[in-house]
Image: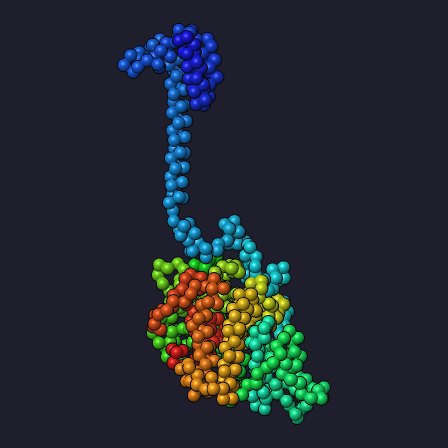
Amino acid sequence: MEREKRNDLSFSRKRSFTFGAYGGVDRFTCGDETRPESGENSILDILDSPPSNRQPLFSASSNQRDTELFEIIEKLQVSYSTIDCVVRVFREVSYHLINTPLVHQGSRIDEQRCEFPLPLKSQLLTIGGDLPLILPPKLGGYWIDPPLERLADVSPTSSHHGLDPETYDIMERDGEAKIYHEFFRSRYHHSFTAVDPSLGPLVLSVCLEEEESKLRVMLRMKECSLHGVFSASLFPNIPSAVELAKMLCDRVTVSKFEVVSYLKAPELITTFDEHRVSPNFKFGILYQKNGQFTEEDILSNTEESEEFKELISILGETVQLQGFTGFRGGLDVCHGQTGSEAVFTSFHGREIMFHVATKLPFTEGDPQQLQRKRHIGNDIVALVYQDGQTPFLSDVIKSHFLHCFLVVRRTQGLEDTGKTAYQVSVTAREDVPPFGPVLPDPPIFTDCSLLREFILTKLINAEISCYKAQRFSRLELRTRSLLLESLQAELSTRSQCMMGDPSLSALPSSEGARGASEGTGGFIENFKRAIRVRSHSFETLGVPRKMGGSASQKPKTDKDGEGDKSPGHLSADSLGLVELKDQASPQEET
């Protein structure tokens, strides 16, 4: 019985040596078959005996067995030490992953990094010839003009004729905005209000142009404003307000309109119609040196090349911000917190302020350069000047607002004239509609005045077109709905008060009383409230809510330029709100 137990134990031990020996398996196992049984039993007896009773394992005469055993032990030690090392590394990595906070694993600085894959980056830095100005992102989502397949030959030595600057038409953001002011206010007309069960608040204006026998009608709804002109000879009798409204929109279901009798209603209606019209624009300017692929590199440039300065001088004039009285585009003109200089220009009755990255404050130790990003990241359109052959990646600048980039690169001038030539390309998010003026083929400019006319027109049209993108159009729709609802309620209340309704003989609101004395009503105050509560709309863009604070405090922001919005931007300027606020309280601009 004892002998059988020893045989079983011998078999299990031989298996343990076998699976851990790494090469000594067959030799040791085969050797056991020819060994004397007494030798095997002696080893087992020694291994099973207490440590105090153990005898030496082998005698001095068994050198071969001694050598074999130590080889096996050495291999076992190497194997076990390797496994133990792997286990320790695994434990350390697991502990690190489990105990690392999520904010470090998904830090926002990593979210905004957008580098080329190393093989592509190295190829771009070593490949010969001219590279395209813009490359599409890996995940798409942007269109490029001209397309990359059209850039086979962009040599300025080839014959090309740029379009006549007179064909560079500036787009109108709201084609219906000026109609009321132009055709209604100077003529005798009537306005009506109603609340449709399906369409919401409605404001209707009707004007009879007797000299031309025309009936002009304008209907304001949440989605848009509709305008129509009808021949008066078509109607034996002038149609009712409901019939006229249904002629413009067959979805109108209201059965009755209320007449507007408030004497200063035209001022309120004009304010609503033109709330999106602004003569001021602001654009970012980025300076991309050769070999710069990331947002951090581009925003960290502090020096300007002579070529970059020359392009800036073409676009506008460098002005001192201290005491500047023109459109400032959210820059500080009192305390110098946004730098000492900026680039400004006037263009066809419009004022343009450029946020030049190299002129905005540079912060040591801040790779994100938030003082620069909070201005350029809040612009809708930006110009990129390339000082070299490094392409610009469409989505390298992370921002909820930036939707379009105009990229300019200086190229070799014409051989016969020696003039400087500029190559131009445009990229925008895929939901931004195309806009003019059309790029020449090839997209090369040698005339600086023509280049200025083209770039400024293209920038303005780009911003107007970007407002049709999904994010901006949704925000504008909510703002328009709020303002139209306020306008309808104000006109209805004031009209009833004008007609002597005893329940509305005195407005309870101090704002309304002040508005009545000033002739503006509470509608202007609702515009101001729309500015203060616009953060609710920004939530649809993924933008943090604005934090309260004194006017002298710096606006809060994050790396994506999604923080506090400066006056004159989409949060107000693009919606026509800041201009109205400035008219009501000019000192707030500074």
